[in-house]
Length: 263
Image 1 (cartoon, rainbow, N blue to C red):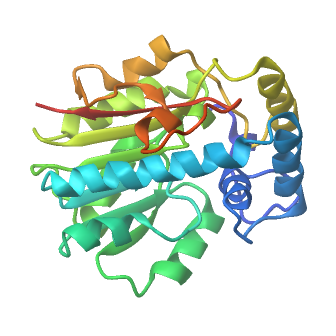
Image 2: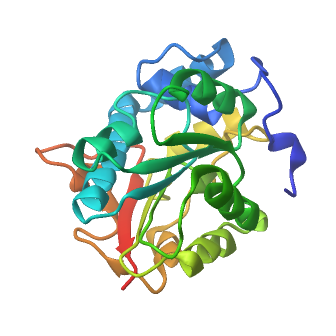
Image 3: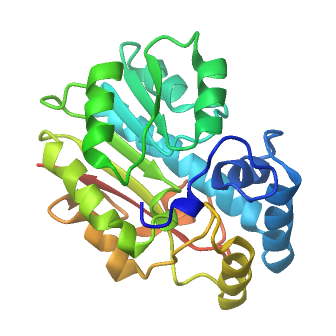
């Protein structure tokens, strides 16, 4: 990592943490004042940001459902965050009981939560790894969780890539994941967009600069590069609300979602 000071080390209650801010937005209790301060500032600018968090969570669950119904039994959840029900394994195993999940996060606090809360869940393996080190991540998914990359796999990267700065090579990392995907595999991504309300972008950037929660908002045509060589499932790369059933309104924080299939 080029910016080591952005990496989480143990519990630091004085710096906002993306997993804990997200947990706060979902109504969880695993967060600190620094996380709630960032969350509350976001809500002051865009009161519908909690809706965005729930749209993102529902997109993740929809991606899992699509993958499981397509016969995929292996899930690599990168940036899994603090466990929050329904979890990836609960949706996947409700459709395919033999499904296995590598629950990956680079935050040691999240890893500790996952070990504590998911230790009794069959087929789920918490792993401490960083998408910025894709070869190590893939090796651990295989050796610890039993992921077989010769068979279809669903890579789930929701709420992660906008925390990876350009000089940390996010596109190269995702390209490495695409390389190992067997035909029939799916790649699901959610990413913050430059279409977000300008004041929200400025406020959130100022509040999180230099922390693990710092965001790089990217335009849709740039986010699309993560899916190079894959067939996009409908509705394509679109705001989260457009992936979900019901007449859901757009929010000031725009997160783009997409699912690509390797043929």
